[in-house]
Length: 488
Image 1 (cartoon, rainbow, N blue to C red):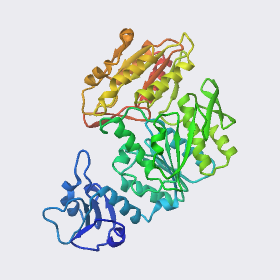
Image 2: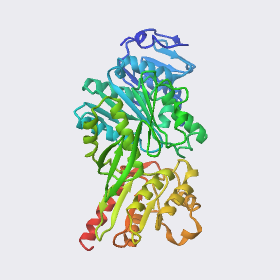
Image 3: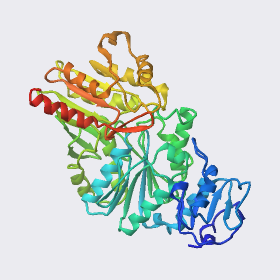
Image 4: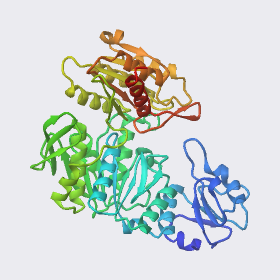
């Protein structure tokens, strides 16, 4: 596509050099540049794309999108100088891929917790009802039945538009997408026309990145600020910040709730083993999940499905048999009546929700043994809160490594220990090696107890000193179960 067709909508644009080369591809990473590509020099939190312009040109770039012109521009190269490279790239991506969002109904889900479950359940439900669907999530990317590995909750903007274009080509009608606060701040969804957006909740997270909790809220709000007047905005009004999301939004306002009157209301009537009977908008429904947080997420799923026009009875029927989401309250029979649960909970609020759900399943004699850590190079301020949340609802807590990244695992655990209440000091253990921590949890458990391994969920690696090592909480539990069954 000729460059002039890509840049027709750009404002405050200054062009230097070759005006109208043929553009064959787009790239944010100079290592992915090919002949005829446009390279976008974005200034990130760690690196500045302007430092890689010369490398992109050596790899064959014909055009450079940048905020500042290089000191020695190459005459044969087209330099597009704009005030905001990310905004401009959104417009260029949309044009290059011929506006894929115009042929898709895209629903974005944002919030601290619940994004993956809601997006995945919607993809599974829509597919079950016969609709061709796409999924962009923390766990994976799905284009109908084809699966692709996810590297971020929300891909970079070039990758995102590439996937959306593939979804159009494969005949997808609906796309369900997690939208992270990082993606909104970095404008990874710039230019995407959302059919609807969902706000689940907000609690302390990512304050290593955002300047404050208020800034974190404002960033989430961007998704709703950019909706047009034909879109819908569905918010969880059980969260006190839900109203903020709707301020100045042009979208049609809708609410879901477990506690008060709302467009989509859910109530738990009964919980038996690992199933619960729900009342959603006056209709009873059994689902193979338990917990208030799951009930709330399912209300969002139902609301979105109905707003998309899916038939009510078919939606309820499909919801009653939806499979669990990887790493979200996954249950394992450990033998001797001991139940293992793996969950992605990595914030104090999410951990408390999962533990309260397990506590509701317990008899007075049953105990909860929790294995939990906290990520390195992330918001260190939430570490004591993670420990405190675990201690409030557990009988035994084992503090361990999560993804320490460049930090010392022992230093992270020391931060977590600041949240230990005085009455739990004798019941909290520290085991740096995560495998050994899970083994200790099993050794300390009695018949009937629950073991919660929290924080990593679906992840199958540990990141230590810049390297990823294979590690899967689920595999560790299954390995222990196998050894136990053999009497080893």
